[in-house]
Image (cartoon, rainbow, N blue to C red; front, side, top):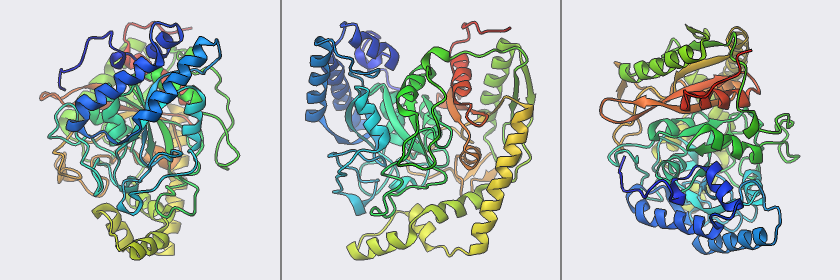
Length: 479
C-alpha cells in the first residue's frame, strides 16, 4: 500500500469507535472529521476511484448540524459526525444512485434505503457513493459508467467486488465506515483483497428496502433471497458499532428478523472453553492458490493455539454450489424488466449481466437450485452443531490484475464462473453470518483474508472471533 498518509492522530486514521468518541467528547468536531474525509478523497481518489459520486456540500451542512446539536447537549446518536460511504447499489434520497449501470446514469432516488436512513438517524454523515460492478454482477470493481476502482496496495491490481469502492474507501482512510451489499461474497471478497474487515450479517438482520424491493427499478431490485447489507470497516469493533445501528426488523422487509442483540459493542467476548473450530482450505471442491491457502491455515492454527481450543481440518459434505447459485441469481433477477428497459433506452449491459440474460433457464433448473439450497442449509446446520465456526480462505487467490474479472486458473484449475470467490456463496445460500478478517500477506505484499462463518444468528460470535484474530493479546473468558 502507498505510504502517503498522515500521522495516526489524523481523523482519517482513527477507527470508527475512536472517531465518534473524539467527536462526542469535543476533542474533534464533526465538520473537522468530514472535511478531513473529503480532503483524503480529493488527494487519493483520482488514483483509486473508490467513489463515483461525492456529496460535499450536503455533507458539510450535515456535519455543521451535528455540531450544533452536540453543543446544545442533544443526543445525536452513536455515529455522530462519522463520515461514511454508501455502495452505489444502495438507495440514497436526493443523491444519485446508478447501480453501476448506464441504464440509471441519472437516477436520483426519492427515499433512503432503510440502512441509510438508520445511519443518518444515528448521526452519520454520508460523503458519497462508492463504486460497484453493474448491479453487483461479478466480483469486480469496474462498470461501463465510471473509472475502474483499483486496489490500494497496488493500483495495477483488482480490489475485488462488487463492494469494491467501499473496501478501497476504508482501506485508504477516506472513510472509517462504508456500506456494502453481499449476494455471494460481495462484501467479503473486496475486504479480503484490500485488507479490511467485511461483515455479512445473518440474512434478514439488516432489512432491505427500497433497493431490493422496488418493482419500479428493474435490475436494481437486488437478489431477494441472497442479498445482505453490511459494514466494511477497519476492525471488528467498528463493525459491531455499525451493526448496533443497522440491525433490527422493519415492516417493509418481511424477511427481517427480531432484534435479540442489544449491546453489540459491549459484548464482543465469548467463553472459549471447549470451543470447536473447523478449517477447510477448499471446502472439498474449490481450486485455491497454495500460498493463499497456507496463509489462511496459519492464521487459523495460530488462533486455535491462542484460544487453546479444538481446531480440526474438516468441511461439510457439499458439492460445488456454483451452478445452483447462478440459477438462484437468475430467479431473483428481473430479466424481463431489464431486457425491456435496455431495449427502450437502447443501452446494453456489461459482460457478466449480458451472459446471465442471454442464458435460457428451465423450471427444472430453478427447482433443482431450490432443493440444493435446502440441502446446503441442512448440512451447514448439522456441521455447525459439531463445530462452533467454519474457517476458510475468503478468496481462492490474492489480488490479480485489474483488467481481469478473475485469473484464468487458480490452484491449477480453471477459475470457472465463481471466479476468485468459490468459497463465499455457501454463507449466502444458508443465510449464515460470515466475515472476512485480515489473515496475512503474500510474499509479494498482497492481503489475504480469513473467512469466519458462524451459526445461524450467531453474528456477535463471528465478530468476537474476528476481534481475537486482530488482537492476540486480548484475554477471553475461559470459564
